[in-house]
Length: 311
Ligand SMILES: O=C[C@H](O)COP(=O)(O)O
Image (cartoon, rainbow, N blue to C red; front, side):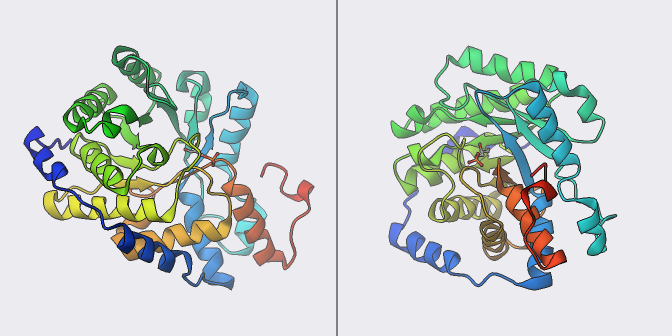
């Protein structure tokens, strides 16, 4: 695992983001023409493989988490995939993000599903550091192979970048071999410059992915913020040779949005960032619309509710 030395924080202190340029680029992204017919279906199947299927609600129960995991194992109806001759191409979601401990769902891990608990005082990141580190260690002990951690926004808002680096690096060490996705909670970072700096610091401290939001802030994954984050990923890669993944999350609901996110990744970071090892869509209800659009592509009509019962 790569860690930058803390002296790289000089780089962080010099960052300035051109807001107008970011907003202009975001408008272009939002207005991009979305593929149709079989090309759209192909993009949607690609999006399915990149979804971190999520449930992070206070009223989650073992049964609805179990149901979500079963949906992750077979995200699109087998007959629909067969009609497209894609039934044997491995379109499992493979990643499910949950509050519950991975240990209670061990049976599902045998389906090769990666269960991703959230840790570090999710969603606010304000509990004592000792408690947040303990949450990460417990998740690792429970068998988590991926962990979504959330940063303490106070450190970013008050410009304590060295302290933020130190915390994230401690989370990284507590994660051990588990993949660490670092949530910036961009809706609470105030400025694009803070978003870029928090992205850099999180990458320097060893994050495997940087992620926009918990889904609980009032502003979540937006295209302008994504442009700032993916440009930070690109700059970091050009300077260090390290490839860090990107995960937009929060409020992503429609198949069309999923295709726009994929187009953004392709244009900004290239084809390599179109696979789940470097790109995830964190979403609790996106899959339902994607399956609905695939159903429409295959049958020429939209499904009745009972025809896609698990969506
Ligand atoms: O990480 C994933 C987010 O919590 C999902 O947010 P969402 O429920 O708005 O899709």
